[in-house]
Picture (cartoon, rainbow, N blue to C red):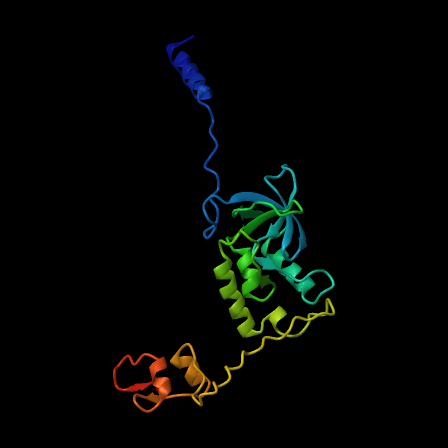
Length: 231
């Protein structure tokens, strides 16, 4: 064997001895919190319940989405909310689950916040666009303030379950959003007392002058001009 051939064989042997390492795992999409568990969507049960498995061959388990309650089967908006969840969590695609304090409910379902393959926060999306209500599953309250704020926006906009209508999939529409009437005037003859001047103005009250109107003392005179709740 020539020296050149021997050197070539030794080089090949050295290359074969180097262990092959897997490339870095794919990063979660932007918006998915650190520590979320990656799973594969197996089945959409309804708007707030899905079946998933960790990886392609792991055991299937049922997930109840935290802090959102979508219409049950037989009620208005059931089919629409289920279709929305199916669009956000396509079967066969990845999803990301995050625990709160209590990981399971009394039925053995895994309680989770869920993000889709593109990073959409599914629980929040369902509430924000009127597919479901914000609901607290004590003690799991990590996002409840956010959910309630999103529900307020959906109610204000009259979206889906807050529209007072029905999508044709059930017989029990949700009530239409209602305005809270202003408080009744107190027996003293003064105007109703509102939390802010803006609320008083919206109800048709104000302005109030110092030394003339007793309501003046209820609000802050920021510019010191002796007048509050100017319109």
